[in-house]
Image 1 (cartoon, rainbow, N blue to C red):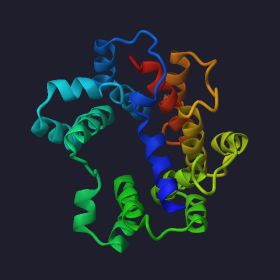
Image 2 (tube, one colour; image 1 turned 120 degrees about the vertical axis):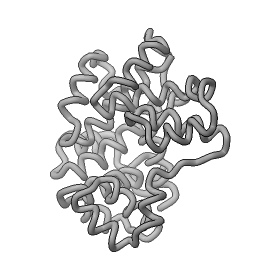
Image 3 (cartoon, rainbow, N blue to C red; image 1 turned 120 degrees about the horizontal axis):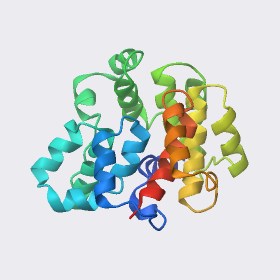
Image 4 (cartoon, rainbow, N blue to C red; image 1 turned 90 degrees about the vertical axis):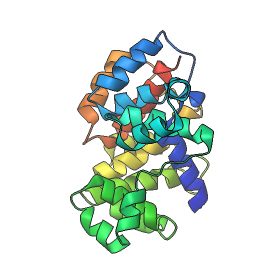
Length: 236
């Protein structure tokens, strides 16, 4: 159960161009402008996921390592980290936190820091249960958000505890907490990536960008879904 959930989570989180549909007219220059200047994380990441080839071709391994860990925008970090995988170099953004702190310390820090909360759940991911994640995601704050992201992997198609498509949509839109809505969004995004849902197909690119701006930080499930849809729209 755990490994299947984690694989589904990775798929929905990074939504790379290999999973995207035929491009709709965005040029490399367009995507570079977005990834360098966009303030909405979900939009920046969607553009960055489609710039992996550019980063691989134009940056050295050393430069990619710098950008993957210290890039100015989330999209730059994603593009550089995905490019590094072609060199068999895998950047764990939580590595320094995990090396420096215990799980208990990260959990305490996670009350005020999302990276610490995510590092905490990354560290304990092999020991959590579906029930504990559901309880944690039903809480508030960064720890609940990090729990919801991991929970979405267990809810995604291909795991042992998948939501139906209708259940994923309902949880994304109506979940009781941001963490639970994020769990639904991760599952729904996976359905979209697998071509098993046309959710959002009638929305324009501008609608998706506006929606991501409105959803960021609150409607976390919808923000993740809009990120996935924009990744597909930005595909060249």
